[in-house]
Length: 487
Image (cartoon, rainbow, N blue to C red):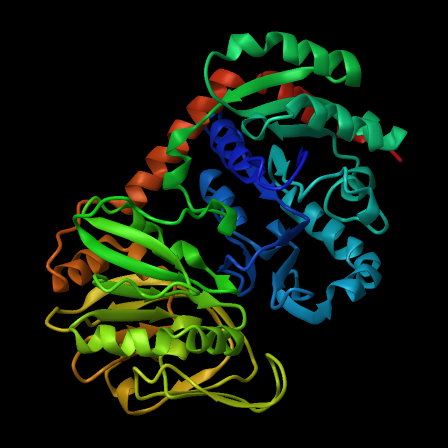
């Protein structure tokens, strides 16, 4: 189990790289994360949802994704509450204070899923969440040491040196752990090192002397990580400094979700991608606005309108600009969003951005599935696409007579009469090279990116990077002794 001294120390990326590295060694590997908190989710073949990080890790291991790879997924809907997804299905929506009382019920499904992902494989790589040093969250813990001790899984602790204070992070974590937890830690990793790794030899020794844990490696900074999907918005940057190229803007919604839809556009050489806070106006020289998914469509639509973006978007389209909305962003583009059952707050309805003649009603059941079909862009023939849908609601209206996508299960999305505004529920459209190329051609820009090929090459490079910096033989030896740990 790879645990971290804090959030965003690189646990997800390390597990993905280790999945690929051990796969290349001929092992059957599965990733696992007991509890994840992220609105960046993906649909699995077994009609559930898991964090996008676990989907990437499964891909790195060349394994089919399963809801059991991330049995508890928390999807924040507000500052104090989240939707609780257990083994791929929504179990409850709860306030943070109430989740503590719910946690004891979750260890059983977590251990059940862990047993399932261990069937028929040589190695399970487990990712922790946050930090085991958060001792105020120890009661009922399923994310870090609570799980490790319950499942008898050895732990390797990872720290991020780029933040500074890496010695204090590791030694301080050791200081607050209980004796059985400290005994569960079999080594440490220092991640994101810049410069000459040999210069940190004294630091490694100091940590080992003060903790009793051996160093398993110092991992240099991996610049190509920006080519891989970020797990959360901490991995998103504000924008591209280039002044040339197609200017694509995505508003940073308060409850932004599945924002990795923007990654292929962000990586296009001919595109200058900008993530813009909604308290700033839409730049006047924007060519395309991408409205991303949202975990709280009603609240984010209100926030956009209150910040003046409805007027900005209307003027943008009037000037000849284009807008595309995906999932929640698609719902926002309509005239009305109705929530009669109060799924996202008090029952009622709100005005949308009014750029598509559609109306959305939020209602159960939640759609969670992989999909494929044919996209129909203005002036372009049918383009084969695939992706996934995770949404609650039904959208109808005159503009749906021009669907953006014809899926095997039926039409999806809408296109305005002038063809400048469009949207759909299908995530992953821009990951399809043919679709992205045709879409950019509408805006007068050529595509120069093989996105899926780039992801695979980056995962291979990451595996080689970890092979050169981590003692993988020792790591596998540690993994084989999991039953030696007990509470």
